[in-house]
Image 1 (tube, rainbow, N blue to C red):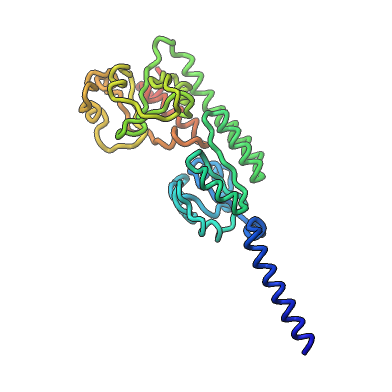
Image 2: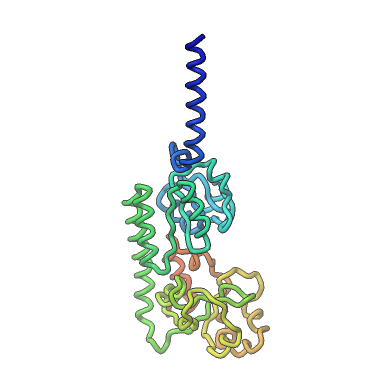
Length: 294
């Protein structure tokens, strides 16, 4: 019987020691045997898919809607409040996040021992750096360089058309991110750079905050040539703008250059489709019979 009791005592010590290890060493408990990736941001989800990592993606946020196959992945909560229980169950190798809004979530995930990459590019070059770094993390360096080359080529094509536009002929643009309250993109924002690449002059470029409220009176006073709504509203865009006090005399409204048909994800989401976003911006700022710069 002695050997039986020795075995029982050993088993108790083993189980107790294992419990202490789980409680005090969460990193070891959760990261051992981890696999796959979780993306809590639509932009990083697009990057992971573009890198050819669809099979390795185990979870995404509820806002991740592109490519359409992202809908087939396990939902791990929304952008600001991910479900930690689901994340723990999926036990990912790496978690990809973005921006200051997710900072508390990033801190909690790191405290649990997860490896977290936070991407928050404010410009095209920072986006390319992000793609390169995610490619290195996921061992997709070659594909990352291919994506970067494709983006550079697409943006260069648009930039060449921009060079043909005389400085005094470039259109003033108001990009409306939301209508209540009225919001736009200022200096230092990702969108501000895209407008410049496409040949436009952002009327909010002197605002020192990337994204900010902007008064309707300011828009009327600055009289933009073109208004682009960064949300797809089914209502008649020109008619809607004309109902705002003082906006009926804005050049963009009078000439009908108010657009609500641009997929906002192409310009607000720093991802692999950025060159397409710049191209679509330019088409609306400089429409012609061919749909491009005259």
